[in-house]
Image (cartoon, rainbow, N blue to C red; front, side):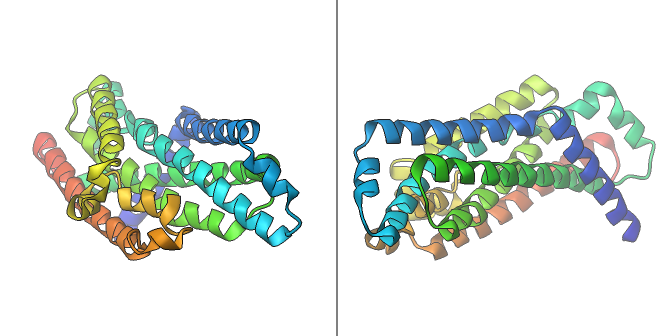
Amino acid sequence: MTWRLAQISAMTYYEMRMLWRQRLMLVLVTFMVLMATTQALIWRAMSDDAALIAALNNSALQQYLNTRVWMNLLWPSVYVPLLLVGGLTVSDMLTRDRRLGVDILLSSTPLRRATYLLGKLGGAWLATLCALGAALVVLNLVGRVVVGPYDLGPYLQVWLGGAVPVGLLQVGLCLCLTTFTSNRRAAVAVILFFGLACLAWGSGWAARATGWGIFNPARPFIFNYYWSGWLDSAESALLSLAAAQLSVAVGLIELAGVGLLAWLWLCRHEGRI
């Protein structure tokens, strides 16, 4: 067991470094920062809210209104890149080994398929967490400069309760889905289709259907809760934290199911456990 943990840890660190060397995670961070900054600048230039908030003499009320504005601008700017770009960052993790012949070398070692898959998943998750951490720091500065002083508590809650579970689940599912593809082009096509389908399923009637909303891989309950439900008492009855947490739990079960299928696929096609 100790040896397997050492193997997983080594693969996790190596894969994390490979993702950052390929600048894929940098693209994800840049996409989130540019999208949020652009929306904030447009809001400040075209909306009268900025002037009205600045004219208030109540600093506590100013901070509350700035928080509402920034959260509404920030969360979609983080959510959309995670669904579209987050999966693409891991599209080459498995197919790269096949293209370069690394899988043949790994087959000559006592590395188990489960250890291999967990190492890849761990590297993708660690790189994603690093990307989210970098975006958190940069966008905190952007929000304070463009929007104004706001409450740091809700800002951190959006990242920890919304961005982290959505990002990790999306990256994990996309990585496992690439197991069934034969090359990079096929992997990119599958992940693009999956990401676009998630965005389509995450809006409209599909997001409000209770059963489908829970099982929906776009996690619409998480998106809707952190976009409006948790700051608006009128919406909180419909968009509860419990529903968002249940969506995360169901997402973990879905990830475990897809991961099991990916492991069985590797075992069958490579003839080893």
